[in-house]
Amino acid sequence: MTDLKPAVVCEARMNHVTMSMLPEQLDLEARADINRFFNAVFGWSENSYLSAPGSALVLGWDEAEPLVFLLEHEEAMLSPGHDHFALGVDGVDELERVEARALAFAATDDRTTVLTHNIDDYGVAKLHNIFIRFLIPLLIEVQYLEIVES
Image (cartoon, rainbow, N blue to C red):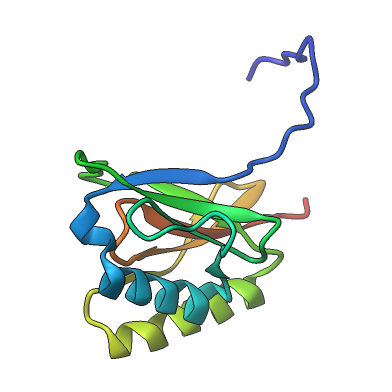
């Protein structure tokens, strides 16, 4: 591995992810379903300042931190495979709580797919993750990176 040091350190953080969806994919019923999913699994709600039927559905933890923008567009984003965005959690317990909520939601709505707890072992670290799909173009990965003591 090369030991490169960056010339500039950027302390930016991830702000949001935006996906284009067809207008019929964000009709009132779909918006309600998407809101129900994100609220049940992640505790998120619709951002009342930025959301507008016929334009955008914006979700996040609170009004000041929108995380997911779903924009109505005549050409929808296509994600044929494993394209995703990832959310980090602070431990395996939290990952398992999200997984339990996602599985409980999936039991009530068969449009939900949950790829359950997986561990990728890299020797010095273990990546614990789950993947969830529900109505939006991208998979949602929830992950915890466990550093292994040597």
